[in-house]
Image 1: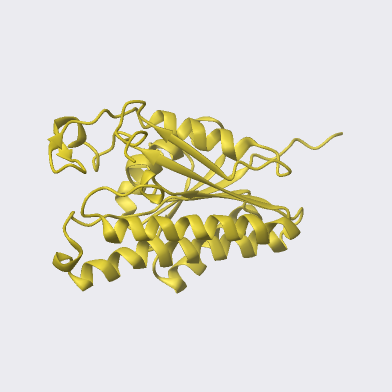
Image 2 (image 1 turned 180 degrees about the vertical axis):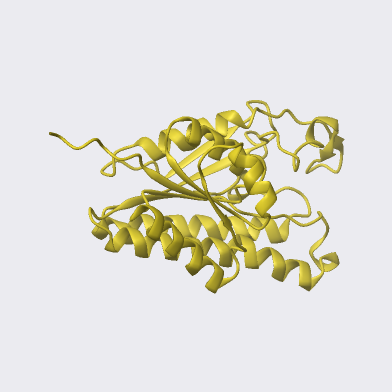
Length: 249
């Protein structure tokens, strides 16, 4: 008899809220084996909504914790097919000289070091598992292309993510590993809830901005994840149609 195909596996970082939570719930509904990684265990359990998910309380900026989390994935399922490298934080908008160095370092620990550590761990699993290969999807941002006022730390970090995506997309070819990036603009989460009320613009004014349902982000990540490994979507931009990004420059 032909063996039944096993469900594919995905690890989602920043799975306790927002984009991570919406994406995790969609993958669970689609029958994937899903690992939920984030700092707050109770938030991860809430994301799982009673479904069978692997709960991994972890700070992505902690090297030992990341290694332990990915080892649990390997022990549970024997392989990792997809990493959605999603975890990220922001700091309050301000001119660069008003941003505390401590805030900058904390942001880098999550947005840059955390992205690197999780990509490193996933790449190692995918490279050595059988059959070899997998897919890494990095969460970039519209800020990887054009900044908002007062966003030096966040914008710098998202440009770093783009560099990671390009490098992994190249280095992964030898090991059947694909890497792509989703750059998201104005998905409605707790972080963007202020946008429809008004946010600073490049001309100094405060103006409302349109937002989109976060479900569209989850659907796009699912589409990227379901591509065969000989196909890659290096970069995709998904945004509320009328947000002030196209036309900024």
